[in-house]
Length: 258
Image (tube, rainbow, N blue to C red; front, side, top):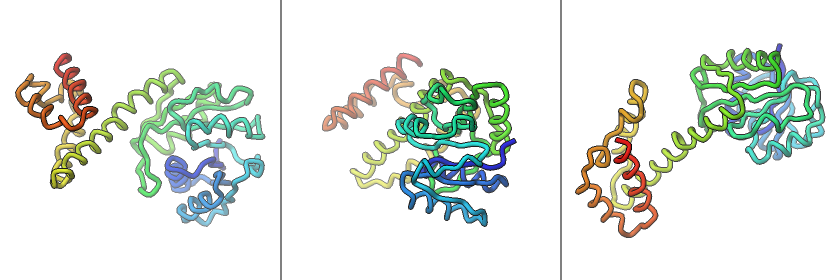
C-alpha cells in the first residue's frame, strides 16, 4: 500500500500532484528540485503541517518513501533515473512520451501519466483527469491503479506505445489548438479588436465534442466549400506567408475530408 511519497520535480505537474496527494490524505516525505528554492516554494504552497524536506541533491533523497514520482521535463527523466540510488524502490515518471524502458535495471517501476495541461499557479480538480497507468508487473500496475483511483474517476491501463500515440494526439488537440488561439489573438490585437469577443465561440466549439465527433462538429468556409471567403482571407494574409500557408493547408484538409 502506498502512503508516503517523494516528489521529484517542482514544476506544473509536480505542484498539482503534490496538492492532490496532500488533499487526499497521503504523506509527502521529500520534494527534490534542481533548485532547492523552487522545492521550498512548492512545499509552502501545500499549506500543510507535514514536515516535508526540500533538497536539490539527489543523493539526499532517502529510501523511506513507498513511491518516487518523477515530474521533470521529458529530456531530464533519464538523467534523474541514472542518478537515483535505490533500485529496489517503486519509481514512476509522469511523461506522455518517455518509454517505460527508461527504468531498465530497477525492480519495481511504471508510468503515472495524467493526461491534462496544468499550471502550477492554478488549482486543478483532477477528479475527471485521465490517468494513464503502466507497470512492469501486475502487482505494480495494480498499486498504481489504486493510487490513481484515489485521485481520479478516469484511470486507464495504457502501454508505452499507446501512451506515445495519445501524447501525439494531445499535441494536436491541445498544444496546436492553443497556438491557433494565439494566432487569433495576434490578428485581433493588431486590428484593435478585443480577443475576448472570440472566447464564447472557442468555448462553444470545445463543448460540441462532448456530444459530437470532431468531424461532425466542423464548420467554417472550408467545410462549406466557400471559396470566395477563403480567397478573401488569403488576401488578408498576404503580408504573412507562414500564416497563409497554414491557412491554405488546414483549409485544404478540411475541404478534402468533409
